[in-house]
Length: 367
Picture 1 (cartoon, rainbow, N blue to C red):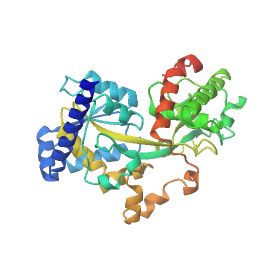
Picture 2: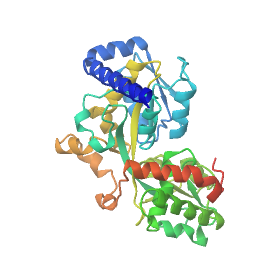
Picture 3: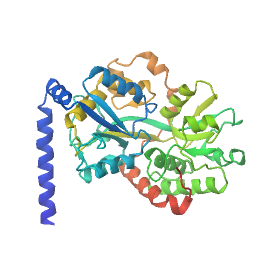
Picture 4: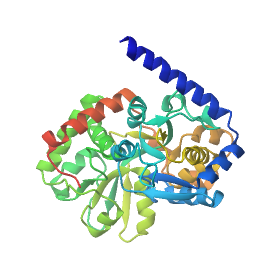
């Protein structure tokens, strides 16, 4: 116990000194150090996710001296954590500098010593409830769970979770990730559970597993990771995904086939994603500069263009920094009025229930 306490105090002291040193580094100094490193390695950033294609291009245009090395765009949050662990001693291009993961993965990554502290210049405008006090992780954007529906193949567009259980949707419903590893899919299970009246957390996680068991037993669930391509091909005519991904897919498909994005009437779940820098980042200065860009006005508006609500949304709106056309492109505000933001404890409890019980309860191997 004494050794653990001493180690904990030492770790806290190191974190405090590290944060102090980072805050003393000016932006020009950081830019020079990052340009000297010459590369930034990201992971799990699909270009059609939250406007990341434009965000990455914006960073590259601002810092052409820095090559952006993109690893495994379709990876899930758990895969990102494993990539850090697998490359602790690897300073090559397979080691991620930064990660973008679901809220539950931020604290656990910090607890495992996989992250390092850095407070961005706009730190004060990130809501306290979605950031680590020491700067190891911080919320970046959020959306709500929705249904993306291929209207060519689905005559009656489902409006709520209970609808998906109807016989008319046989072989049509999919998740946009593996619920054993993907934060998006793990929280979809939580939302489904909440729609049954279960309390957020472990209770809704278990209820969500029972919901997907019923969906699978009915023959409605398709164990294929759904995306715009599989929806257009007819493999997964209905995909459960974040609203910003669904809206981006709608734009990508451009009416071929026609699609509808539905925010369900019940179980309206909001999900926050967070950023963190790997404790073993080969290019730590480029990683910090990337964070500074993401949380600048330019970076935050880049996410908003991708239909995400960025972390600084309220502060930027109050300051008149958000163009009206970006606000007009979002779904009606009424769609978000019933949105529930789960606490970190609820997210953690749901994650444990879903990842631990999917195979035994649902038994569908999503891939």
